[in-house]
Length: 511
Image (cartoon, rainbow, N blue to C red):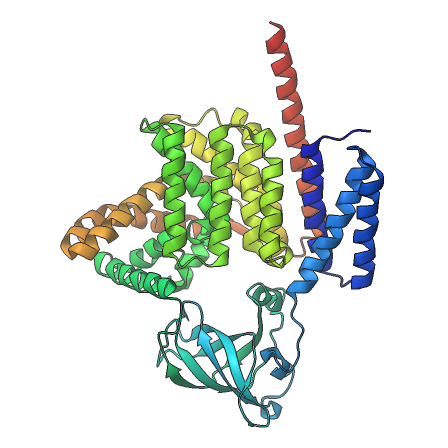
């Protein structure tokens, strides 16, 4: 039985992805995996033609490679790794042993209401015996007070009782930190500044520009509108009041202030539709938005999560611009494989990565299913097209959200219908207000007033809808079987729609 090359590529990529998923839960002996690779290669050599058996051989090879890649991403904890000095999480505070180590802050400080989190790459330590300094490696999440505050590129000497991350109730906090290769936490250690300005020059410059932008926003707009605009432009939701975040959560619009592939994908497609409605060609709109995504990735400091989000946004744009959704499955599979090569842990332990992929799949495959049911929406300013894409993303992500977060928002479609069409406009106006505000604050404030009106409308609407008792309901113990069942139903609807389209195309060709 012959099989097409495109099919082989898809199933090979899928095998690698499945391998990474298996390794997320089970560790397999390397000898067993190497034997699997040898067996797969032998099968491909014996069967020279593109047969099903040859494809199975390649799939076996890439399945084993996916498992190996995941297992290699988990560090060996030896005396040269900072996690070797972790205290057990269950150890009493008085029994914990402290060590002194030096390291450099390698990311933007995460400023919260009552503390700051720093990602520190360890360089050297005196160990438990306080002997001579020796080289070590590994990341530490350092939680410190608000003052003094340290910056990206600062070299710190820290004395602390390190602890290993552990799950917080149903949240696998340990796995979440492992996505960033963090296996140690330091709570309120003694910190001394040793040196500064040791980070990457480009990254440091980006963070300085971002700090000026944040200051400009606070001068242009009052709170909470200033924090909200920051959330829209670069995902800075940490400064927003908790009641507003809860309103967004209950109404299903939290994604508008989350820098993820889910958000970027929706916003990118909506901006594309908006530009097209103003007379711009699809090709020009595509390149304009891609440039915007690249600029956004750079200005946020280019962390891995933002790069992944930007890639997913571009993939969704390609699908909607080219209009060949049926041919996109290979592209999605290859993109997923490449992302897992860089960090295989995100497949199972990063909800943002999962939501990004599902939202993109929704935009590519589920939009044709919903188009028949959204014809009643107005077509001007591409509102119908934008809402169809948004609802498609919501449908594809709902089973995962129910499984991961155990909450369902009845008002999500309605709230998104009233809010989302204004978000791209507000982002554009807000961006202009910030740019002119950096030049002359009064001019930025004048432009920012338009943004303030839209921001206030969204905040007020989210408050009204969020206060409804039935806006959001908890769905406890949503089993993974139900989630899989939901995606089987969605897959069936997509398949059925594609079959109907094929029949319609054949009938049209006969006429």
